[in-house]
Image (cartoon, rainbow, N blue to C red; front, side, top):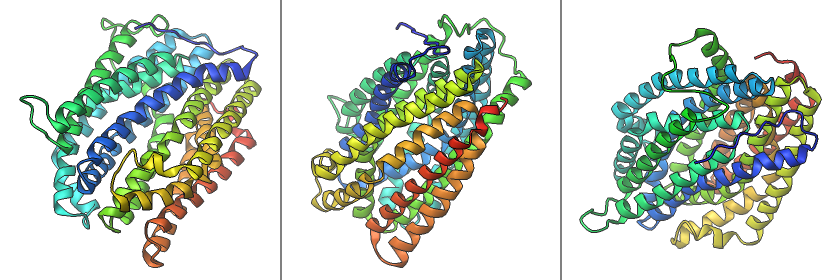
Length: 453
């Protein structure tokens, strides 16, 4: 698998650089999203209870990924700064310490989830049916077994993006996706002597794919021509580098933690509405995730270009790259929003054949379509600020939007006023507009240009 590092510092054509970095990231996000889509589509054929169980199990698994994403954010920002400043050895040091730090963290998370999965699900989703909780618990425990190597997959891909190499993560994710589809086909439905395992089979397929991706990512990093990390290097913890990663990563982790907690509370509200409502919620979320892919791709480009340009002491170019990425993202995601409004049902039918689920999910997808430009602004400018290391500002915006607005309004509209799932999705739309406005205001102020990381 070839490695194609991309150093964007000093390039004149910002739009071309943005597209060069963004398109592999968009494809990668398409492939990454396909892992969840394939799981949902395949499990959805087993019925609403199985679909709800996989969704609840995935909510718990995502809590662990919160920590990994935080470390990845710190690693990406620091690697981008050092690459922009032509300091490849220091970028390699950051990559090495990211592996050291992550091994301990991911191992701790894995043991915790293995021991507490069923109890945690029972506490968080106490109104869900017992069979759903039991299946969800099995899903969590199986996926958790792959957590250490899944960490390596996540953080190494983030390191490579910070170095301007977005094509290699795309290729790794493509292989992970293929393995996941094959694993799901074998273990969900059963082939030959292997019995049909349903929800547990989906977890096995996902775990095997993540392990394979982690091993491949490690192999790529140890052979990278710019990030010269070798197995024979010293992996002794370096407190200074770990502290620098933490200074960016801890606020990012708190942000991700607040997002996950808020999403869990939001999910608790939705799951209390019944199995059909929760299944429709999962279907609509997976359908909407198709629009996340271009947004996440342009956010990746913004992170890399802002970080590298700041490392090269080009703050004006860093701001320009963020704005160009934002504008391109708004254009693409607005088109996706129009598609969601005009033809929602064919998209929804990919994930479920239940008439009640399809009808309710269609309404939700049309609702969230109007917020796609705001979602683009939020995703891409947040990516730019992460590249600058301005993760504390993002944390504050998440608290204001997701925690206060979405959760508060969801309870008011869905439960108190009785609007059900539609009320919960109206709250989501309002939250996205609030966060889009706040992140744009923060970016415009320009304080992030002077941050030292």
